[in-house]
Length: 107
Image 1 (spheres, one colour):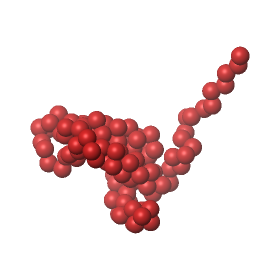
Image 2 (tube, helix red, strand yellow):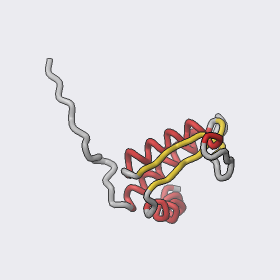
Image 3 (tube, rainbow, N blue to C red):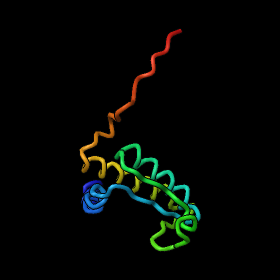
Image 4 (cartoon, rainbow, N blue to C red):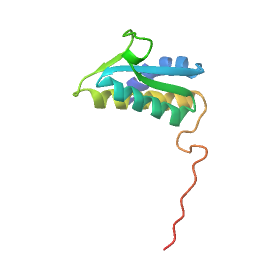
């Protein structure tokens, strides 16, 4: 299953990795997923990514991600995995983000 998923996202990941920025659109339950996916893409790929409610973005409904309460988790996991593959395609180590420092606390 994992190998098949990797093959499925390889082509879109390679295409997205060549972009300077992307916009993720969602409607209904898909709107917060679009914003969360945009955040995951920003954090892992260092690309300019924005997530919008489709109606807020130039008043169009084309190509918007439509989700319902039952498949929101599927969308989130899929988009997070796509972000990971885009980061790897761009040569970004998403497991060691730049600018992240350890917090040291003392008692």
